[in-house]
Length: 317
Length: 280
Image (cartoon, rainbow over all chains, first blue to last red; front, side):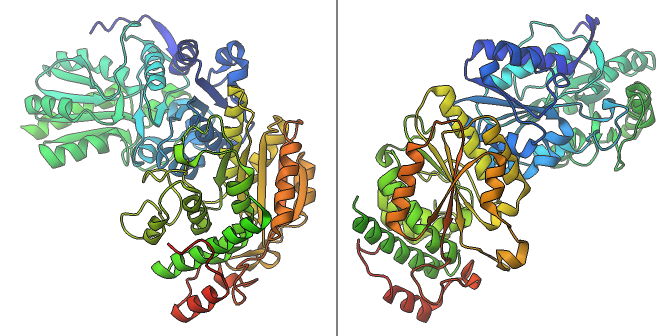
């Protein structure tokens, strides 16, 4: 993988472009938004397909269940609001009418994690991956940059079944190839290595990319795998990598409990135990600040990944 | 169907409800008995449906959603009697491995069920979505949703109640099973619902009231709402019903919301309900 930064873009804009493209490809794609159309970048879709765009007002529960009702007739509804209001606020609606009823609803969740920034903990959900991955029938996708979010959105539209698609607010390096097809459930090998495997998702993938040259200078040859699909997890890719590296670091903008690290730990414990460290928020709520300040404050930055790698490599020896 | 035939069908449905709930010693007979007449009229007379060729998408037919999923025995009996699945399957209600789960679900493959319900307050929103889909498809059929009255205490109901008139969802007919009883007692005591008619009218609905256990009145009302559909507003039928209707010791008694009759009580109940179509 060439880690050249093409530009700085927000993943939510990747969703917006992906939704527009999905709408152009399939007239059955429809969109719902609960009064956050510009924030979640649904405006272009709404403008081009006004008859297929449903403004529900600030009524997320009604939005989720309306989407389920519309999915019955063969439509492919995307719901759009912040991740906090896409999950915790509407968990029961998702559980009963989307997951249990197995409806083809795509829950597009923006502004996830602490990088939402100044709005603070009420809006910075750090539990959403766990909430969604616990639901049978639910697919959970956390793409890492603009290009991948766009591709993941198109892939979600083409996939039949409930999907939770998590993305974020700030502009971040856009580095994955624009023409790369997104395969749900297939881990993305970003760099092969032998000494440690870093499994990352979302914004922390780029933070892990930045750790690679630092680790190399320290004589650590790290493997980096982007787990953009938390569920279904690419167990085969995980086990293949740890068989080689024998130790693991996970990195995510989410609670330890219920997140990517928790899923990886389960695979290791069941199949191939080895030392593991987690870069994640550890059982506290977020707070106000700039995205960069918050990543540093919550130990979710590149130096934290480097430290975790050093620690886990030492544990291996 | 004639009114007499509908009434005979409803009586058999009531027998089925008692036998199903008695058979597994669990379930919700009170609300089921009270809502039987309305849903019988819908399925056997007023809805354009094709039970033998059930379509999950509901395209080209009327759709019905049960929001208060706990009155599932009523719905299961009516669907079976209407031909969605074998009547004999009613004997499996609430038993391990059944398609007739305690609360309705599409996950066990039961024809006629499109979405799960049980956690209250969600059916109106689902119906709004299905009705919007019909508009997108140019499908001039109606979407019906039955809700409980206690269910009106759920906040989400009012999200849907606000959406439908605001967006002109005029192919939607909501029905409230207004028996004025809920688990803990009368709705007046638990959470006074106030003037439901005025509340829905203030939200922008056309509201009609009906004596919900009078088959002729129910049929007339369902005809009325069909004639008045597609005129810019959603419609609400406030159906005044009696919890436990048809079984004297269950009528107007909230204790029968979610209790099964014992052998003696079941025999007593069944003695009050004529077997008209043959028991399952």
